[in-house]
Image (cartoon, rainbow, N blue to C red; front, top):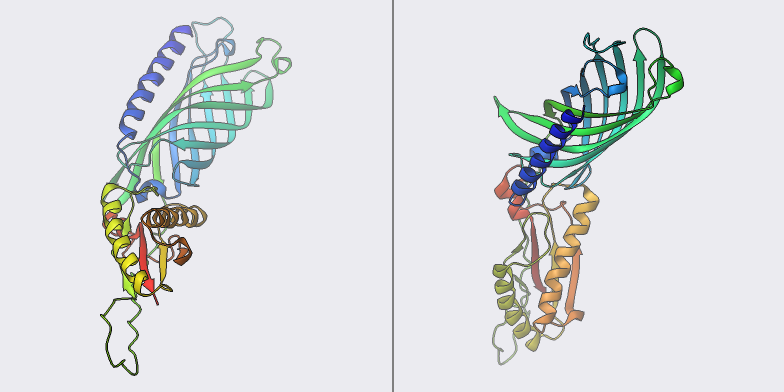
Length: 341
């Protein structure tokens, strides 16, 4: 058992290093943010006090992404530990569990989505020759999912390595002398993303027309474009920080806005934040507000009056391109800037 455990933890350490190394350059994909169902085959390194062969079993599960990094998952498992003729007093075991778990994903890249997971649940341990205990267990470990397509249908291969503690009652198995099972578990299985992809029609941005005076003055002043739509400021996925290109664009915007404000002191500056559809509505609403605030703070730092700026946050509700493509989602991660009379 000691050799098994050392091999298990060595493999887990290697897996963690590879996963974190790849996650540093990963980006989220739609398929990795969809609800899913899954099944897996499990290999359990039997605790010595079972006095049995290692266990084999399976898991049926279903999960829902809560945010860019967190999942919640429900599942059930069955495992069978066979008689081992090389162990004196060996007897078979059967095991049934129901579990609730959560995962923290280091990235949501479809090529490799590594995570740390924790489960808690109920376990029924049955000694075939007599003895049964209904108890609870917990486990923790590392895993990763690789997504792929078969005939335009999404699938994922998931592998994980965890350590499980099952708190059995020694009084239920007096002949065994068991207490708490400590068992490494290796799993390999299939994930099937589900759910209908939302189809959102693109909305054309609107520009308020320049008001036309009904009676021009005797001497027309120089024309100033008061109501103006500036180039959108775009953001990286799940970010609200301004890159070098965005800052350069805002420098030009601030110069024009300050020129307009010099002739029209009452001009208003409309700053509207937006996101793509990946993530929950509440998360995207807050993210769009952070993006709008980042632009507002930069403009005020360039001399635009804070009192003239009006902040709006629309989350994912007003796309300008389809969210079903990477290019469309990139266009939707934006802040719009307008001057209004």
